[in-house]
Length: 119
Image 1 (cartoon, one colour):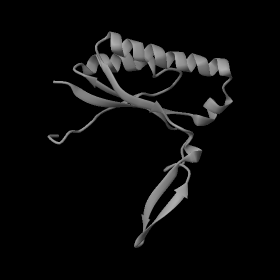
Image 2 (tube, helix red, strand yellow):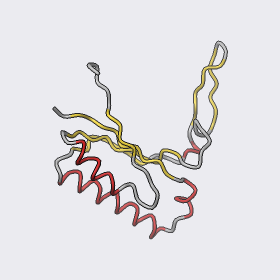
Image 3 (cartoon, one colour):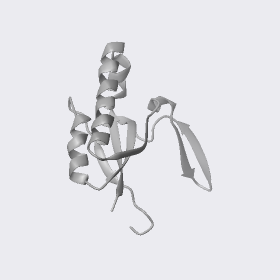
């Protein structure tokens, strides 16, 4: 049975801002290689995106009887969610193996199963 997973890619946004165009191209190539490996190994990418810098985020919070909208990320941390992939696969172990391509230079790839109505 095919299971759907979200691969979350947190990263240091300030480091990204300081990268040269060439350094960013190396990172984008890693994403292309990752996508190619997923497809070659039988996993299906069903969605994903690079996310805009968290300084442009808006957060809606319940406050009293109403809501407040604030600017900026939900939490103040050195790393923010920078992108994600949605992947359908029958082989979690192999998916985790491919995710090693995205966990480099101290980076992280968090893999979480999507719950369906039966879960």
